[in-house]
Length: 128
Image (cartoon, rainbow, N blue to C red; front, top):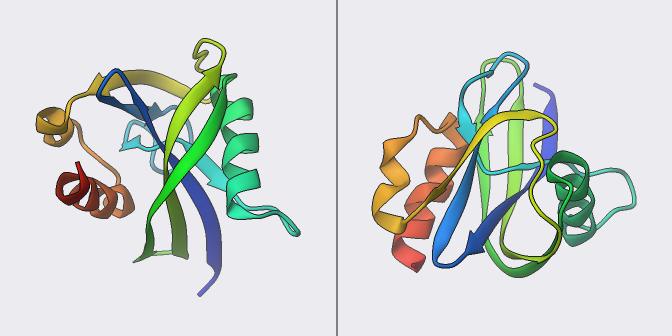
């Protein structure tokens, strides 16, 4: 089975966490933490900064590593490195997503998370 290594940003602002809704692909309309694939020669931290600049047009700082999720989707294995992150510059512009929500810890279960992201939500509940 093919393995895809990705990074995800858990962006926190004013005590709320950013959730984004996929606007494309097989998992369109599912909610996720934004991010994307790690390129060859890139650290996870470099990848998350680049991906968020591409997807949301903001600059972030990965403040703290939270967890790595390993999840088997039907067609591939996903390894996702997740970082609590803060916005250092810019205003969010949705490039690849169709919607976004700022959620409190108690609101995390109000969106339909993609399967791998559910594990991140559970880790966040213990951390926050």
